[in-house]
Image 1: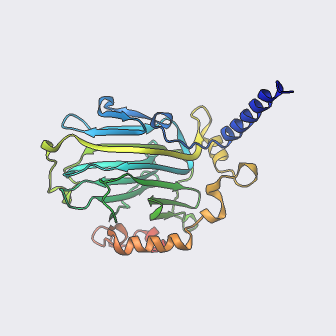
Image 2: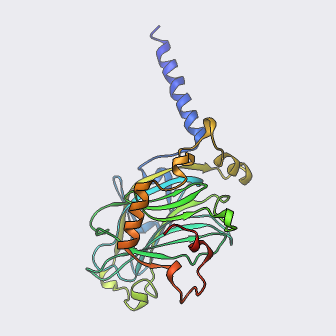
Length: 298
């Protein structure tokens, strides 16, 4: 009898593996399982579970996910550039490809020592962005690792910092506003010099005597519907949009279609205490408020 145990165990493991493969969901903490450097490979350093990426006066650096995804949740823990980070930008974002691309951005704008890092978020739909919001954080993001996440489903895109929502982009298709739902997206991060605009409107330049500027990463997690490139786009859309039954994804649960009451209160707190810029309120840029601004819950 004992000889049959490894076989049944093996088939059980295989069955579980196949079930996971069908759902196409991934969760991991190892950089190289999910990501690869995109450029400047000599600007990466690996220390166990940590990955460090540096900007110096030769080059910045960037990495990208090995796969593309449609709907789900992506998280990375980042420790931003310490000390004088003025002029530098570190970005963590999801993006599709092409001229009508969709994109969800976190951009961390460096600052002079002691001044707060600013977090700029943006949403591009069909190639159009101009939806910037800026906030400062309720902690120093250079001292410890903090989690930055994007939750994307058919109802909303939620930007989260340590599980606190800092921005929601709702599906308002019923108001005739396009929503990102049919282009698979890669996951990316990069660090570069942007001292023409990043710090105090470009007035403060990068001080290269403080280089290299290092962003550290860990806790890489992607729990999302994977879109293999060998599969036709229409079939990926179909599979990743499948609702109910055995193929139901947790991010399609009714409870995930909007923020919980607690999360709504958290978002209100962030907006009241930490938001320093909102495109919806910028009448000099938008004399007539962008149409989605009239419908989003603020």
